[in-house]
Length: 336
Image (cartoon, rainbow, N blue to C red; front, side, top):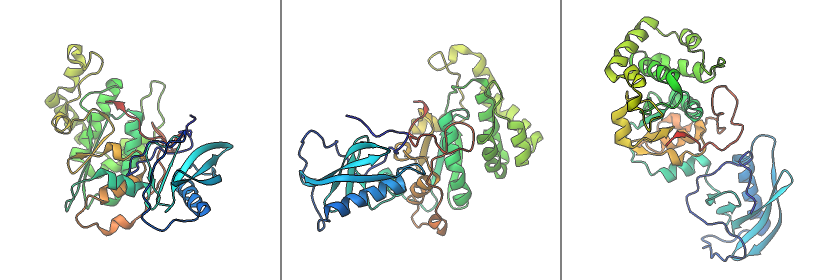
């Protein structure tokens, strides 16, 4: 059975699991509210798809809607292709080919992710984003994170942390250490530095122009270099790189600056997102600032006014640069 192209639709976090309805399989869906007309229910699903799941300039429409096995069945038409789709008669749930879970139509993607995460609420949520600095998906996660950090940094405890091994060579270990030290000693410079770094063009060997970003962010290089030398020695960064007998699986050098937290949370790869001691990475399938913001805001006992601010619902692209995701699939990672 054909699936909806990941270049068109976002993999979505639903709150109710459904198997695909196909081949005449019967599902009895409870109707809690008065049934909608078939066309109205189908249009509600299409409106959701167009608003939340399609890239700009692409529109879906429905056709051939009919009553089938207790739900409304219809064809979801996108760019000349038809996909089997279904919506409950009360217009509450939508499911289709290529989407592994039901979508609750009355909630935004961020709200669904927040509901799925089930995070313990606190007065000041603690947010940890674990990355490898040259991992394409880690870069995507940092670009997702930065607008939320700028919005909520005074209301939540937020930080960038590092997976305890590196997959992208010595340049990644050096960059991890650089970002660690900026955050440790010059935290007010980190956001500006990361905005520059993640948007960077890279040289022939794939190295970003971190020097220009240090200058742009106003980082004190003397203070930074002192921290890098001390931290390298404290955490055996260069020593672990040079001792290949200690490499993870014989392939990847250790990077144990945040090893205690990696072990505490069972971090496997980049990115891993932990909020109030819960790994919520799988709940943030759509790596947009708005989705992350809503998940973090769901972790407050009392949400601050900043949570009313709407951020971008577009997932940034993987890797370096400022483009939006070429594919709206943002569930990938490095390692794990």
